[in-house]
Amino acid sequence: GDIGDVGGGDANNGNGPNDGANADPSGFKVPTCRNTDFAPVNGPGNKVPTSACTFDNECLTGCCDFNNKCRVSFALQSGVEFCRSGFTPVFSGPPCANLDEAFGRNNGNNQGNTKSPTNAP
Image (cartoon, rainbow, N blue to C red; front, side):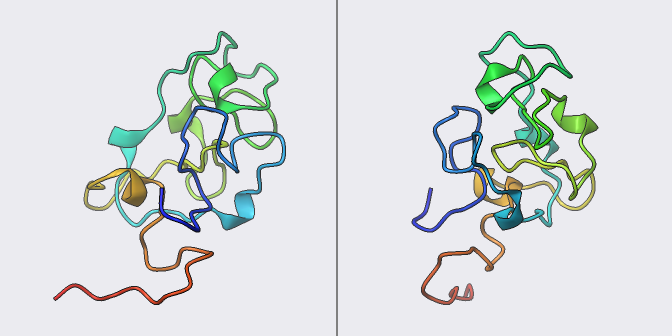
């Protein structure tokens, strides 16, 4: 991901700054596009939904929420509940074009960016 990314970046591998026990959902952004094509649907872990977890990659679903429970990503409350990767489902709007859009990382409001976004010509 880009320098300064806060939400996601390392979806489901347990290695990102926000994937584990010290994850902070306050930096996550809700995308403005429909991101269902980018939802985590299966992970390497063997824990079933509602099992206790700390990392996304512990769960069969690839999503560990901030109540430390494995979840089905589509069952999260949009914009309120997040996987550790930063994913929250958005079911309306135009489809997201890439992972950055799907995780709300290129809305021009990334935390940590030191320069203003450049408008497209």
